[in-house]
Image (cartoon, rainbow over all chains, first blue to last red; front, side, top):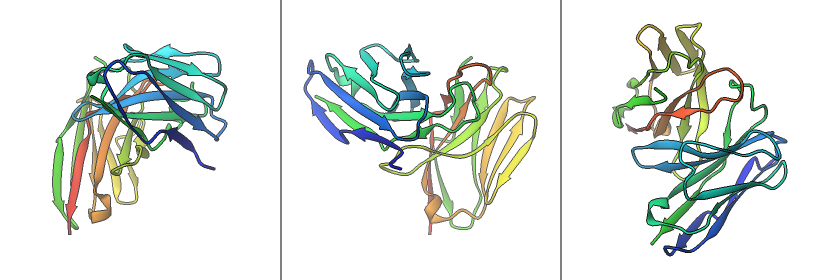
Length: 115
Length: 113
């Protein structure tokens, strides 16, 4: 099993450009998450999907959109990138969204630089 | 009320020493407290977790101490090794329905040989 995979690993964008970060999991998990990690701020939840067909805003959703394409895939889109969106983005998944003890499994991250 | 405050921001410990990282929370509804370990260039991975019905949980060299009345919990790494050098995040969540993890700001630990 590959676990949680993310593409690309690294991306440089100019202000105003758009891009989609891809995430896929092969663990048959129901819930998926997008976080951003910034120095001194820990991990902050952007959007999440409790199950296929549903998405909800997290702590910092402004400037982002998501699509839960199917059970395996959850993408994050930046429509018009801004320098404030320079960050490391992590996707995570969990089998049972209602069971808080269940571990969230994280992908390796996408490092995004917006110039 | 949703914040989890973590300290210190960085920590240097000699090999064989004890590393201690502290977290504090305000929301008394939190009842699940995991710690995540992150190596450079990797995603976080669950290290150990505790529920508030116990005051301590130990897994190998890693121990969580929990003080419900003070709303504080801490990670102790005994006999710290250079391989423990990583960033550690505490987190908290409520155990009802679909709950999201609230993360601390992270502690960068360096264990010197």
